[in-house]
Amino acid sequence: MKELYKSFLDRLRVEKSVKIYGAGKFARTLCCLCDRKHIKVDFFVVTEREKNPTELLSRPVIALDQLPASDLCNIVVGFEKREEMKRTVSFLLAHQVKNIIMVHPDLVNEIYCNFLIDEYSVQIFCEELRKRKKIIAYINDEEGEIILQYLKEKDIQIEAVCTDLPALLLSDNDTPVLSYEEMSEKSNDSTVVLTMNNVFWQRGFITKLRKSGFENIVLISEEIMQEIKQDHMRMVWESGKSGLHIVETVNIEKDFYAVQNDQGGVQYRWRVALWDRRPYKKEILENIKNGKMLEAYEKQFPNFYYLPYEEVLLGDIHNRDMNIEVYIAKFHKDKITSHVVLPDWVIPIQVGKALTNIRIAEVCDDTGDNISLKNVDYSEGTALYWMWKNTHGQDYIGLFQYRRQMAMGAETLLQLPKYDVLLTVPTYILGSIKDFFCQHFILEYDWKLMMKYIKQYDESYYETALKYEREQCYFSCNIFIMRRKYFDEMCSFIFSVLEKVDSYYNSISMVRKDRYLGYLVENLLSIYMMHNARRLKAAYTDMKFNHSLNN
Image (tube, rainbow, N blue to C red):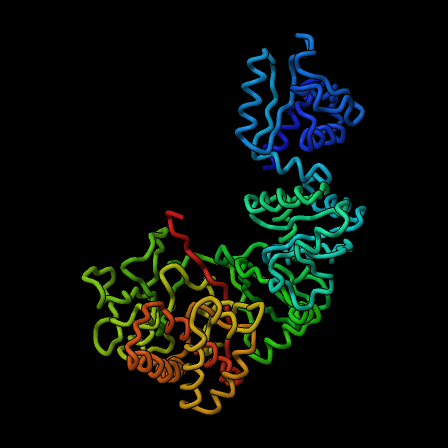
């Protein structure tokens, strides 16, 4: 939109002066925009003299049939409805008007709403808003809550918030909340800031506001919206006493970003989902800013630190005669990614092989003691089970995925003997782990069953799980390398719980096929790490993600 808007203004500047067709709201808006941009407007052109004023914004209003031939040019035409635009342009062409400057339909709302604040700098945008009084923020999605928080952080006084979805707003919002009907009763000289992220959705709200008499409407452009969200993200993580900063260059999945803390000679790093756009609640903000986030993580996973590296290709990392096997899970329906050369210590294993006649790897999870048929529920958990039951004797054993592996340096394996476990960067959740998984991936009943069977397995693990479900960090995607003795111990815990969850759903003839047990594996792995954190020597590195070629 920015380029289209700029191109339109550049087109107007080519002319020494222009005329504007019409005498309604949008015509007046175009004139105000031209005045602000120092583009000369000679007069307004209308079809009928009788139905219009003689003067508008200190310019004469002249009927088309009264114009001399020399003035039948450089007329700017813009309408909210495409059909009306087409009819008007055809009408003007029939009257021999030359050099008609059409307003692109996609620019109508941009011009109408941004003629008050049409800058593409967040700084100037905020400066302009600070000059205004009676600002109402119209919020109807989660993006709007983020914008509201940001504007308040920038000392912009918001008189009220209007929303059609009161439950959307943060419980800690201290600004009066109005319904649309209540806002309509307020003075329509208020400035209404629309914060919706979807441009097409915004148009409906603009029309509604105009019908209620609101003229001062500010629509936030996509460029400003993105810049605000990026700046807000930095403000959240880098303000206060936490010592946290966003890592700009890091090997990480595209829908995530990394934050880091350097303290006491060690590094901590977390990955946070960009798509998790729930606004940060006050207590979460405070935990981030005052350093309690780090304190909470240390209680959850004491002495689990980030392991720095200078990344090399996976195929260039040699095992140096170490007795290590890392299995990389592959499925016959995997998306095509760029080819990754594997070293001899990384072994492809086909998961869900019992579900297909297609063979894509030498090692398959349908041999020996296996649960290959259950891959639709266990996901890469069927590889984990096969490794546990059908291999033995390694000093270290691990699991990668076809698109997700550890990002490692040439010397990473040389450092491995210092540790019992090597993981990938923990994921930080903006809320509780239980709420996050139950909202996005599994049924709340799945979680209830998992907790029930953890308690049956071991009361002490259950006490850890009760703490874990309220925490905010977990190790995602089931990627690890660990000493074999701890691997066996972990798998015994994980599958003792999962087999009972699986059996319960079988007993009530409920067919899932939604990878729910694979998500439970992630949590049980993290619960195991949390429960044994003080006796395990652990480190973590970044997660390398290989994008599919057709994305």
